[in-house]
Image 1 (spheres, helix red, strand yellow):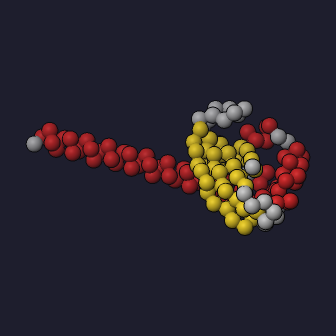
Image 2: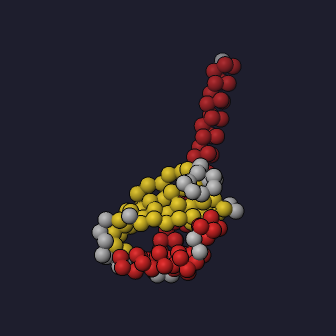
Image 3: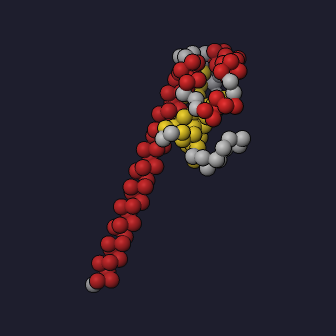
Length: 140
């Protein structure tokens, strides 16, 4: 009886720890998704300064302000309005090519623009000072 009770107690404890970890991970994922959505919405509104301000020191150390604006302005305005956007994929990474090791989340959206029907937007976020900060944006 004691062994069975101990086994049940250990199982319940394991379930509680796993549930707590999963809940914390889901909250982290949600925070990253919201940060990525806010970033692309600023791009949608052509509020490129607000989008730039959402990038962190990692992005800003690799690309200066005028160069980043030049790249965004060369592409985004020509796509037209967003007709539809949906979350495609979320993946965790301990490192990212060309960037320092850390806690990264890649958030990918399938996006339909007015002038480009099949696009994949990818926002890579980096955990900086406890917040998810945009480290890069890719449009394919």
